[in-house]
Amino acid sequence: MAYELYYWPSTPGRGEFLRLALEAGGADYVDVARRKTGMAKMMKLMNGPRVTQPPFAPPFLKSGKLLVSQTANILMYLGGELGLAPATVAGKLWANQLQLTIADLVKEAHDTHHPVATSLYYEDQKKEAKRYSENFRKERIPKYLGYFEKVIARNPSGDRYAVGARLSYVDTSLFEVIEGLNYAFPKAFAKQAKKYPLLMALHRRVREKPLMAAYLASSRRLPYDQVGIFRHYAELDG
Amino acid sequence: MAYELYYWPSTPGRGEFLRLALEAGGADYVDVARRKTGMAKMMKLMNGPRVTQPPFAPPFLKSGKLLVSQTANILMYLGGELGLAPATVAGKLWANQLQLTIADLVKEAHDTHHPVATSLYYEDQKKEAKRYSENFRKERIPKYLGYFEKVIARNPSGDRYAVGARLSYVDTSLFEVIEGLNYAFPKAFAKQAKKYPLLMALHRRVREKPLMAAYLASSRRLPYDQVGIFRHYAELDG
Image (cartoon, rainbow over the protein chains, first blue to last red):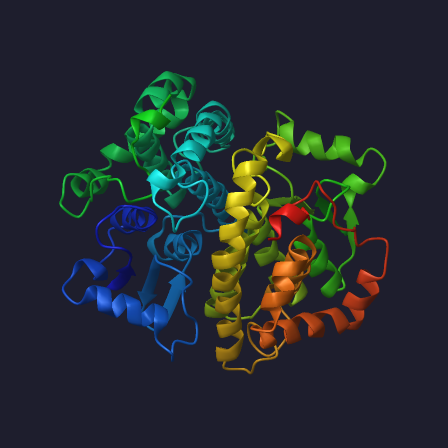
């Protein structure tokens, strides 16, 4: 039975981390909300009065009777299902830790354009966004990317992947982070990228995997926009 | 062998979610950084050049050779070790999902006083903090607590606990959220608490567990302060 992925249909956002894992794992899945009547189905799972384990927000995944939400939690589940995570308990915890650190970075990337409230327009928090973004570019991007560079460098199985000797969901997520930061902060990112050669090599390695290359060239891959997590506003790029 | 907990020694912060689980599970543990030379030991695990799986930030836990970080990840591990989580895969994923949603709330609670940058003083982002906090009090607290109230109400095992029929780490974490919000936003919280009777009953139930009551009365429980996640600034309480 195909996995059912539920996420807002028009933007990569947090759902993209799941799409990448599903595609890298060669999974059979349906991107439900992008189909006719899919949005209604998604809202029913979120707000239906009989859902005993309701998601707080998209994305979420249905796998048979199982309903799983929170991006890192879904990736942990898919990692085991699709062979995109280490097999040992210690390895699984390590992959999950890295994914949670990626999630923290993603939240901060979102807050560069929404530092006051998600419910307000960007235009109503532009001043705060500028201040937040300056700190994000100068302190936070280097702190996070420097950390992931170190993680790859210290991988006992070699520096081709973040965890172990094979592709994992941590790698596809790091790929998406690089893509997103490069879209949102092209000037700032171009200046910094050379400091993270292993991370950039990993990004290329993920992009060139046959399943990834096919996905990225397809219409299943949504373009970045101005409503998702990663947005480009020139005034926030320094 | 005792678990080794590593967290900043002077504040409850994110470490408190782990202390509560360790205490509720009757675990043998050492709160390393609160001991003499403990801080040096903590910094070495974070920054030592030979740590192959370095934490991004405290808290982290050592259990024998295993080094685990990210609060929700550590709780997932401890949940299994201490019998503070469901035994099934589906139950574990559900508990982890709820904990990740709690983590999102905790991050937002932190951002009420640090909406621009963690590296700046509160005094340098007071204006933004006021705006952020207003939205947090009016929209975010009701959204999160309303969600957890619903989760408890729909628990097929009854509405005494968040997950299943027994105490889990999700309950001790919800306890800490209630404590923290009540400390940080006493006025706003007092007005809202009555809307969440099941959550407030769960809070009392956790507090009255013998192991919890003993812990809360001990010097191991640190008081809230003005350097941690939950801080009280009257001007942010509306």
